[in-house]
Length: 343
Ligand SMILES: *Cc1c(COP(=O)(O)O)cnc(C)c1O
Figure 1 (cartoon, protein in one colour):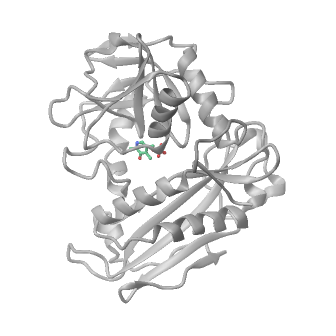
Figure 2 (cartoon, rainbow, N blue to C red; figure 1 turned 90 degrees about the horizontal axis):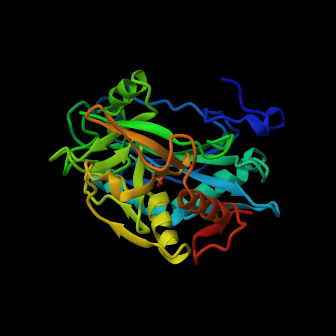
Figure 3 (spheres, rainbow, N blue to C red; figure 1 turned 60 degrees about the vertical axis):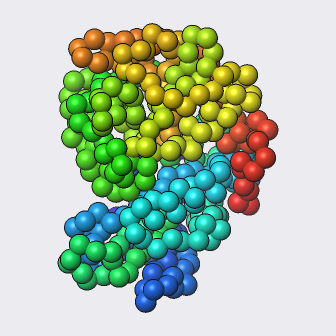
């Protein structure tokens, strides 16, 4: 695959596709410790055929973005939160922890080295950054890998919604994404292979993706595809589900805080019964990639429940989106410590 060329990119028509950018950060764990890491131009990994990541899915990842501000700086949004979550994911799969301060520093090095690929301010484009750790080395028994590769690559991505926030419809799945005390809280590879079939089934039936219900009672909302759910109740409370099998979204916790502290709404994490959707005036899915996808309708047991509208974003959802993206791009004042400048 050819190296990406920033001068040939059409900033107005970026999608969400892998690009082989000039630089990535790579560090190796060997002999019980992290070897010196650094930037490299090598985008192909060479690993043993017996690597535990290939057979047993010993891997974890993160997803974050670098943003270009109107005054042409590059900044990150709460990278400390991704570093902390990555640490928890690694601990859950018995992988060595890459120190959190070094994680943030390495992310900054990658953003800076690929600065030409951070889209200009103005149409929502960003540099998507993907930290990843995999268990390598030649072992075939089911135990932790003797070696690991930690790498961070990046790619230029466009605004998810080209023509403004457009609601999409979802359907509940009969499958589970993660077990009650399984790995749902960790951003680990295996969770996503298991979500491919349920997502495909949802697509075949004309839905954007599926909503997962809790794995114990199949009654409470967990995740919306690979994004977190939130609803705005008719009496002005930002509600989001509480469960040990949900992946704690940085976007979700940021919206929860902004709802309470900037929009003056109530805010609550609690169980949300899929049969109690009438309480909501608006609903959405949130995560780094799309920021917010407004939920038009949710089909459950053959019946479509429409929230605000199937065609128009609701006013509170829009306000949350504008506030959060304003902070990310540096046009709205950020809460203390939420943005870190790269250059
Ligand atoms: C990454 C992810 C999210 C979103 O998390 P953010 O930190 O907001 O990007 C939500 N659900 C799942 C399953 C995820 O993997």
